Image 1 (tube, rainbow over the protein chains, first blue to last red):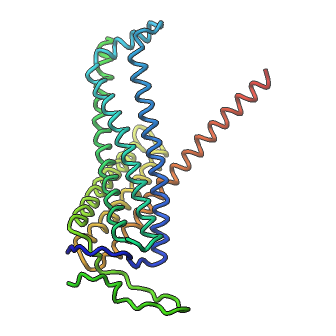
Image 2 (cartoon, rainbow over the protein chains, first blue to last red; image 1 turned 90 degrees about the horizontal axis):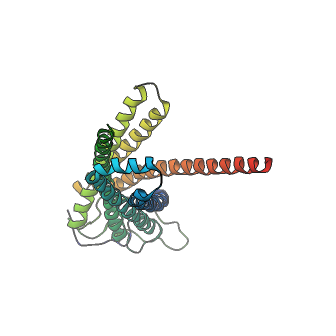
Length: 159
Length: 150
């Protein structure tokens, strides 16, 4: 049953408050690590895209041959690039959501001002985090399929 | 059903006396929208748990095929642990929404399982970072020694 009454304090046992505070520490740690990982993925993806767009001007014939083979599967490459950029963006977003959820749960454990409000907000951000994680896993499967198709196309062209 | 928090009726401790232990709330008056969101949290968590369990099962298979690989076994154990804890947390959060019998207790249950998940992931990240740092230090030390020998 639902109502509009919001509790300033939920009487958590001191042990439970310590547990929630500890959970919030680890959530914020993973949140920051996820954000850094997302930015690193974005950086590497952009670097590879830049490298790929300039490889045709390289001196090495092997590299140019490889470029020509890869270019045959350009729609797949474009799809992979878009997906990698999307996944890295979602990773940064998910890390931010997890970090903020950790902040909310820290407030639940350390203050008695608006426990229910912080709890609800933290749970909502946690929902966003798990939703993004599941969507990322789905995109990961699509990426793997696209990558396998690209490898097959490249091998076919090489033959 | 009364909408006043149970806390309002709790006796206030007098000066110099320790606060009496308050009993956990049977019901936390979440709004309909918040309850819906908690329900979705439970659903997404359950999907994430199932994906972890599938990854764990896949690692169990690849542990023996094509040949025995201990690292896959370790990955399987970790994935299955995380999957089971996430499932338990999702179940506890579902109960917060679907029942009004022990909301606070179910919340604490869910949080304690979530804490285990995040703690385990954090420990893995710390081990990985320590490993990377050690590798960088070893590479630098080898380079330094080789440079000094020239």
